Image (cartoon, rainbow over all chains, first blue to last red; front, top):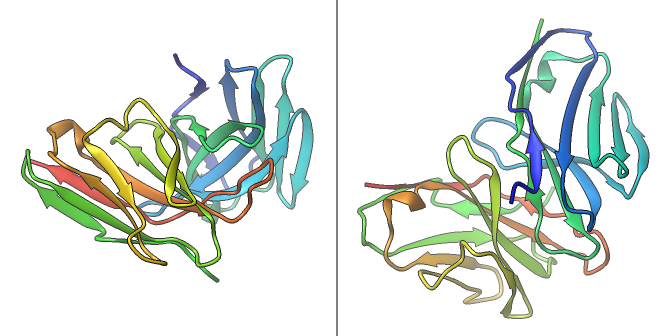
Length: 111
Length: 115
């Protein structure tokens, strides 16, 4: 069963662009929706998470969750070359130990 | 800033050999995890460990795999008889919380190559 789907890209944008990254999922039990950033040869690093539906903003990053559509998004405003990385969405149920990851989207921000 | 560490960074082994991957979780964390990522594929959950026992495991975590916390700091993943398809990045993670959201902190990974 394909729990979480994510377009692997790669995505290449000019510096300053708005980036939109998306995931869809099938499991209605998911309550926590996370975005991780992974640099080459490093482990995933949590960027932000959202509980249930709604939006959450942290600086240049905005996460959106639409549970009715089973669709989540991460927006990056004013993208910087340092944002170049692979972005992974991940999800879990309430209190769940197991995180379900997307395949990751490779992003390159060109100076 | 505290971080999860893993050793070795790269392990090469022959098919059929046993390997042990080592992790040192963040010191005050209570839950420990192993994930793997086959090249080009998703990060996949293997097992979670709490209070010296497995709390959850995936279908991937069969009898060839075992985990152990041999002392107060290390957390290990053992693969008894490696197969070619075990070649992957293995990530250890840990979390402090027992509440609704368990923020998992990941280590840098061990790249396992089975030849």
